[in-house]
Amino acid sequence: MSSSDLYTDPNHQTRIEKSVDNIASNPYLTVHTPKGTVYLELNDKNYWTIGRGKDNTLMVPDNCISRNHAILQRTETGEFYIIDLGSRNGTFINGRRVSVPVTLSNGDNITFGKTEIEFHSSRSTSNQKSLLLTERDTQTSAMLERRLMSVVVIDMRNFTALARQIEEQKLSLMVGHWFREAGLIIRESGSWVDKYIGDAIMAIWFHGTIKVPHADILNIFQAVHQICSMTETLTQEYALPFTLKVGAGINTGYAMVGNTGSGDNPDFTAIGDTVNTAFRLESATKEVGIDLAIGETTYDYLKALPLIQHLFGQYTVNLKGYEKPISTYGTTFEQLHQFLITQTRLAQD
Image (cartoon, rainbow, N blue to C red; front, top):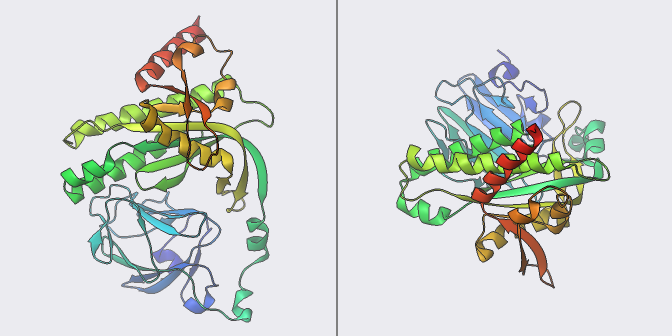
């Protein structure tokens, strides 16, 4: 049986080798199995899904692994996070079960079910071995473009307090459930989760080249509202000591987008002030005492909508890293819900 039979990548985007000598200087995983050891090169993507289901980037034939077990994510700084998706049997790093996204270090041992995996941040290679990087790899790394987008950051509230009050296994299941359901809501709305960060997620919606239709922003509002509602349902499902809530920041503008995927499997990530401001706006919701904060540009695209001025209040906030205070527009999720209901009725009339 070949290594590709053992660990299948349906999209053929991850290099699977029997020998580490065939791996270039990229980070890679060493997978120990009853059939032998295989090496999975971590290249061309920012994240890899792991599980026994065929829809995963890395399909692992282990009955003790959940269909959608975990996510391995690379950040723009080159760090790797492992994120358990609420799997039944858990994900373990060096023998300890992880309940929140954990940064991996070179040589870390990861356990999924009965499968043992080692993470390697890189390997020493000669100039000759570096030639294993293909022309496609070089072209992919240079694919950058400036795009108009909305960046959404959603953060789980009072997570530190929650982690102190419930057992680690329940926390892991709950967080994984939240990541999984939030990702599904975002995908169904036409976007994807670009980053999983501790107890938060970041998603990107691309727009046209010049302006943003009202429908685009309303679609984002609907996704945020659905995640808010889903989050609150976890309170009873996991018997949490207090109601679980989220806060959100939305910012619209231009940012540089890199495609680290290839072919029919693009893997975009965005960088720039538009992205940074979205994170700062989410943090500002705690300071102002609101649930959702949007940037001035996002609000400008909504000005013509009926009742929009009744939904958002204007606030002046000091954002970390900004020399001067800026204006933001904020509201509660309850007000957002009522606004979305009204917009639906108006669209039907």
